[in-house]
Length: 129
Image (cartoon, rainbow, N blue to C red; front, side, top):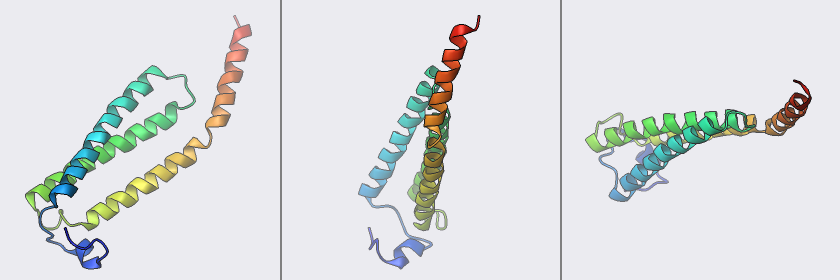
């Protein structure tokens, strides 16, 4: 498995196959992302007039993109392709997930205003023929 705190572990260009535990963890993470894509798509389809609709769309895009990336990483590490199976790709992938989640979190800060606007629209439509 290698020493995770060693920089040589992360920058080695031909690291070899993943440890079975790490490979199983990556497979489980990919499966969780696939289930998240399906669940978020279902939620998004059922709740179009919800304040959380745009956030669910962004989370669905995050899960779908990272599911595809995880499949590529699994393929490259399974086939032991020298440059593309390097461990620094996992660091870049993790940094990308964190950055994307940060921007979704910032976007979700506007949900209370959207809820108020939806309530105002419902109240207004109640009196409009």
